[in-house]
Image 1 (tube, rainbow, N blue to C red):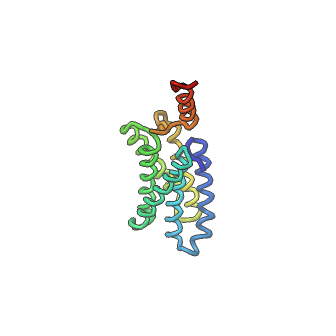
Image 2: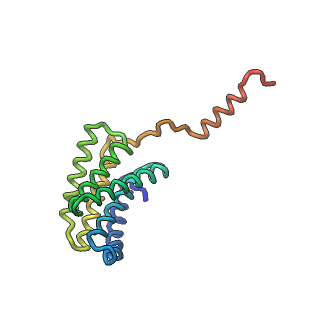
Image 3: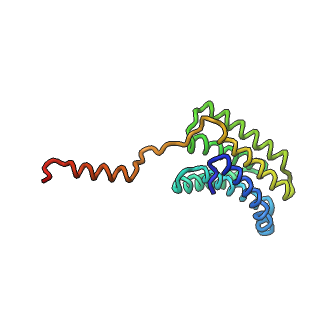
Length: 182
């Protein structure tokens, strides 16, 4: 699911919130509530980062990298209370360093404000109940979607990539303009 715009981010927030309830109702009895919620958070973060990228290959790569980092964090942090801000930092770094070009000062300020705002809003809405988890998830990703309303972030250009049609046209033109053709 794409999440690279305000509207798409809001839709992602709603789907993530609804999915939280479904996942926890199905997975918590099998894995335990804490482990199921931790895995869900890692999957959501990876899916969100993947949804920010422009091309399919970049989406898959970004999601896999965020997922691997998230699983590493899940293995070393003591609980979900520490996992949530760590995954928020993963999202911030992926978005402002790798996927979108931003001046360093802008990236720090914008991502810092989004980090504080999203974690604060999620904490205000959330709680240990299923309803609290759903509302907290929705609130977190809702605030994250405001990134696209702040001017100054641009999609990172494809460095070294050539349009295939333009490359074929250049080769054909070179063949046709070669000296010595009769």
